[in-house]
Image (cartoon, rainbow, N blue to C red; front, side):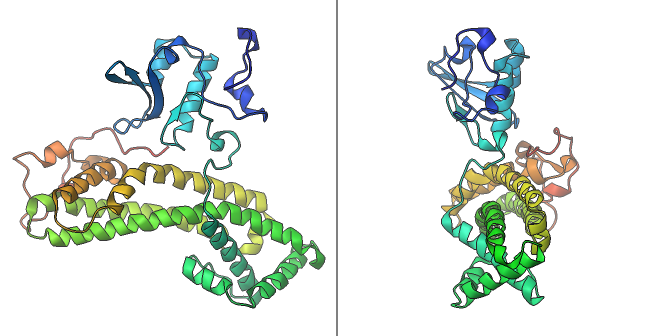
Length: 362
């Protein structure tokens, strides 16, 4: 679990331990609070978006905000206080942590704590290789369609063309044509970072499928005003969510839009892509339960479909609806709530009391 300790003076702080490489830094506390309960784990609270400890006391489950624990037990400026701060940052990258779990590597080394699969690594490599061929021919452009990339890479002459392009790139970079292996190394390094983007692009496609299902449900419930009062604003919020993610993917793609510029500034490019990777990962982590539920939801009228529309609206509203248009479901479901004359809900057009701001992703 950690380094052996014999006295308070010898206890390394989490920050000090983070600099060591002997073993990964793990979630560990000295205070008796964390050791005298039957079970404890840490997560982000869905309602407040704050990091919390979930404690089991007999048959009861108690949720304690980390900042409340810090204040109540005077843990500021202590190793436990530092660990609480590190824990709060760590929960951006994982759904939950327990005592003894390793701190996510994003916090310590900037490396990802998860791995894309081999397919995404292959797609990322072929994408960069195709850009290099485009640079050589004077027609450089980004290909992000996986099927197109894999089809081109299947060309029997592809490997020969890429080998020649590596030599030309080495010459252009001032490395000398015989040092094409260095270019291969650069491409592999960038492809490693981009493979995470490609993996999350698949999750984005799952979001797009949710949008398709919601649109189809709107059609199926075309004469059901109560359901449309949820489905219509839900569809508009999904459109905003998809637009928000598309901007992030476009930014990540555009960073390597000029392959030679990227190779000349390899470390800067890697750092930028890592930043985009983490932004996308943090956002998509919150989407995971919704993605799973919609994946298993057939497109037909059902009680479950209606409940999932409501749940999706609850998820989207605090993240994508402007503050002064955020309508609580209790307001939406009140007897006094009326649809507009077209029979379509005007939820997003109402001006209501502010409820505290858009939910922060970070």
